[in-house]
Length: 78
Image 1 (cartoon, one colour):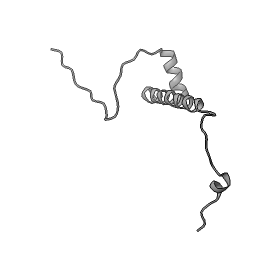
Image 2 (spheres, rainbow, N blue to C red):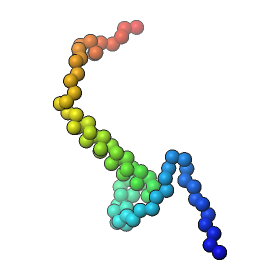
Image 3 (cartoon, one colour):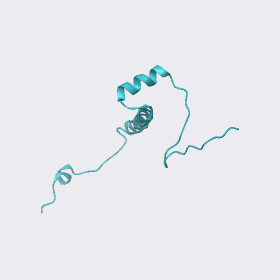
Image 4 (cartoon, helix red, strand yellow):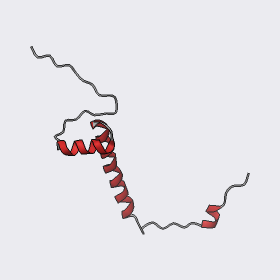
């Protein structure tokens, strides 16, 4: 009889199976000083940030801001 125990992940997480290059994973864990899960989370966050930075760079020179710098630099007096 084959009995499988359900392993549940904490809310907001997803359990995945992936085939990863073992040398790359070992080196990445060495760089982060963390375990596999933490290292993968750091890598995924870096991918997300890179995409956001690319979108921000694409806006360079396309936003027109009408600001009075002198007024915006003044602090409210107490």
